[in-house]
Length: 446
Image (tube, one colour):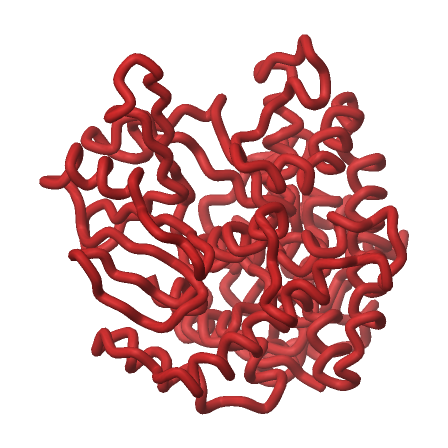
């Protein structure tokens, strides 16, 4: 089963640029980078060489070590070693897990200048200092972030290609789907939340519809992440593991800002900054930063010491939250499928919103202001995004919510700078009191 990925078209567009850059695929482990590069190479080129630097043959490393000064000789030796004939302007060479051999990444400058073949690099943790130490990062790289499958890709894996175009049209026209269709879409979306977007988990679900088998796959991925932390996080691996293990506990609280005091009463952000950066660079998490003055700009008023940390894949969060229980002890599967989420489990709605916004290219921000003396200034907005060239505040709500006090205060305070305020919830489209209420699955169009 081959999963349809939207990023494939981005690779085709890059190929049509005729070798002006190498393509860098950046993403978390097991998100499908290697398969995407290989599938693309087999479909779009006469021949392909894939070099896996996670387990490179000694002879291949020897070629890079001894012949990097002579690009034609290096390419000839690679062709002979892999027994692949290379065709000018119609062959692809893939450097997989390139972060494990930075010298190959530095060589991209000269390989692109040679101009005969195309190059794709794939990897994770690509900007950590230990992975770029002593190399000159090539300016000839064009980067694409590979995220977990989105809801449209998930439905395609289930042989449904008609639902998303209809939802997209309803979003554009600002019209409800209607009760029956909305209920069906929400059922599918709840399954997507549980399964997540990691390709191996999606394939298993599409084939078997077996949530327990899917859960086992996700447990293996989470264990892999933990092993990667132990192996690659160096001097601060203890801090990375502490943050990683504590993610579900932080998100289950009403106040979702990450509190280091839950790890260590005396902990300070400066001591944990590299650990947060490691998880972010590995694209295991989606950080969301406090924009202290949205009227001044989101990035410009960012406070990186105050942040919420969402998991990059909500399906992994479902499993991570119950990692010490067997599958049958994971209450979230039943709660989500039967629409019985309690307050703590509602963290998944906010996490999936963060996941969809991030996959759509948004850097994540929120707004938090505590003013005990003047309650009218006290407010908390889940997300702020740049939308229609202005700032849109977003609140994620349960279906049963009654009011949106913080959103109203925020709109009153910053109105000239704002686009339409948005609420993401589990009901159908609604425009009420100048607030756009979107079913949670429409976040993918923002």
